[in-house]
Image 1: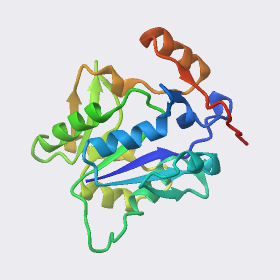
Image 2: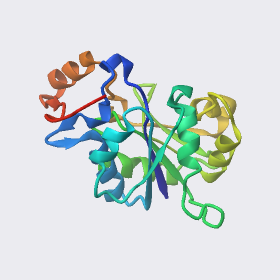
Image 3: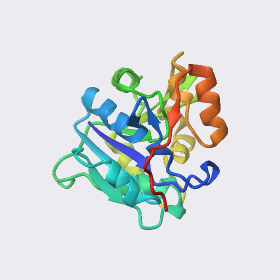
Image 4: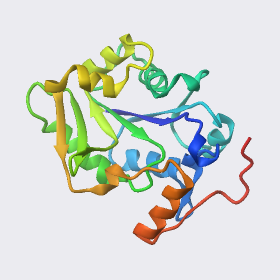
Length: 213
């Protein structure tokens, strides 16, 4: 099993600051995600960067991950996803049985959430290739899918990504119902940071010495 962690966006609504470098209890969100994948037993983690790649790579120092840069992150998340899915070492001879796709701006997705998602995917109904958490009827992240979906996405172009695949193959999607709201919490704006603190009592802080171009 492998994971792709997407962290290439411009974060325009966050004042053009890399959201994944926000710190919760002294650890950046991106490192928390990587730690969560590892503790959940994910074998290989690919991190896709674009905007702020230099600053984020510095924050990843010492971590055993494969970093891929999207040279044109403005093309959208689907282009970053394809780059991540194409980056597996030895991909010509090794096929992962499943892929977990995470977003680096989710502060409360930890090993528990990823392990539960993996279990839901392993127990998905016959014929389903894609598993997405559903919280009170609303879609969440991360998601998981099979190598067959990976092959379809690698053959796609433009803005055709996971959402478009689900729309084209609705009967192959396992919409896994869960009460865990952590799958729905992400950070797009300063208002989201304030709302997170009000909701959880936990504070998100920017790194004190960050030099963000």
